[in-house]
Amino acid sequence: MFEILRNAYRETGPAVATGQKKMNQMINKPNILAGVSHEVRTQMNSIVAFSYLMNNERFSDNEKREFSEQIITSCEQLIGLFENFFDTAVLESGTARESLRETDIARYFESLTSDFRVLMRKKGKKDVVLIQEDNLPDKLMLRMDTARSSRIFSNLFKNALDNTFSGFIKVGCTYYDETMTFYVKDSGQGFSRSSDLLLSDNPEIQHSDSQDTYSAMNLILARNLILALDGRIRVETNDAEGTSVFVSLPVKESSDLKILTGTSSENKIAI
Image 1: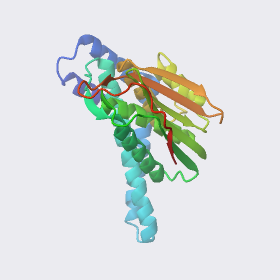
Image 2: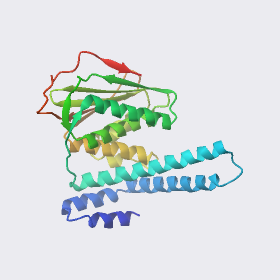
Image 3: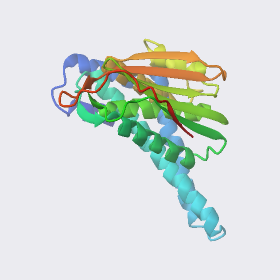
Image 4: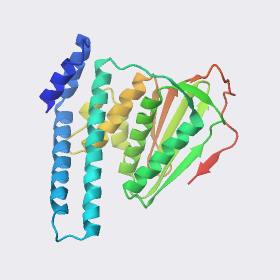
C-alpha cells in the first residue's frame, strides 16, 4: 500500500527534491508506518466482520443497526487516518499553500463547537460535559486559513475526547492584537502523551506501536499545521489534573471592517 503512496506522490508533479526526500522519510519512519498499517487492517477487519454479521438472520434489527453504526465508525476512522497521513505528507513536502478567507470569527467558533457536540454524541460520551467559553467581540471579521485552523482545533478536541472518559472538556477562543488563541482544556489523563507529541521537534519518534495511531497522527498533524501557520503551542496541566492546550495563530482584521482589537468584556459560557 505504501509503495502505491510513494508512486502517487511522485506523479503529482515536479515537487522539489527536498520535498520528495522529506516525504520518503516520513513514510519510512517505522513506528508511524507500522501503526498506520495496523490501524488500516484493524478497521478493515471490523468492516468485513460487521458486514457479515448484518447478513445473519439470527440477529435482531436493533443489533443490525448497531453493526451498521460500527461499520460507519470504522469507515470514518479510515478516512480520518488517510486524511491525516496525506495532509502530513503535503506539509512535509513543502508544497502546501496558505488559503486566507474572510471569516466572522464568532460564527466560525460557534460552528466548530456545534461539530464537537455532534462528535460527542456519536462517541457516546454521556459522562463528559462540553463547556463553551466565548470571549469574542461581535461581528469581528478576520482573514485566516479557516481550513487549516479547523483541522487543528478539531484534532485537538478529538484528542481531548479520546483521553476524557468522564468530567469535562472546555473550549474557548479569544482575540487580541491580530492573534487568535484557541484553547482546549480537559479533565482526562493524556497530558504526558499530548505534550510529547505536540511539543517535540520530532513527534513521530514519540509514537510507539503500543499507542493509538489515529490519535497520534491527529496530534502530529495539528502540530505541523500550527508551525506552518507560524503559530505557537502551549501545553500545561490544569486544576482538574487534566490537560490544557493553547494555540495562538496570527490573523489579520478585514480592511473593510475594523473592529476594536480587545476582547469583549462579556464572558459567555454555554454548556
